Length: 124
Image (tube, rainbow, N blue to C red; front, side):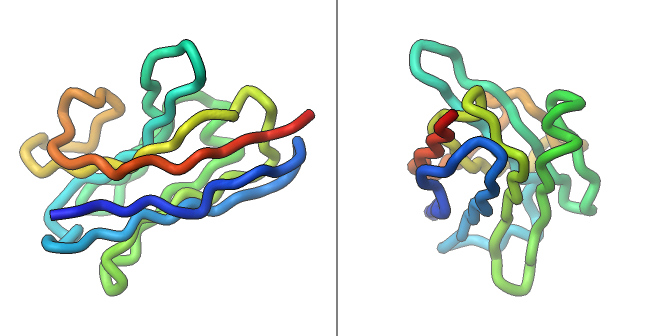
């Protein structure tokens, strides 16, 4: 069972990145999926999640306006499209999966499986 996050990189403020999370060893159809991030010196923060049925939740209105989480069950991936990036978005981004809750959550403690993280750096 493995989650592999990719797509991070260095981008200027105002730019875009698309993160992808590929699952192996299990089928994402049965899992709620979340994206989390951890900036240097800060705690892990929920960014967005998508439920098994496709319902989306974003942590802040800013994230909701700039980020889009979606899932491609055929490819067994979950993606996070990030637009109008800001230096404050600089962090290591993690994807995670869980299946026991009624709906997806932005609380990381709910999640069973975690990817290794991908670095996003936004320069001003």
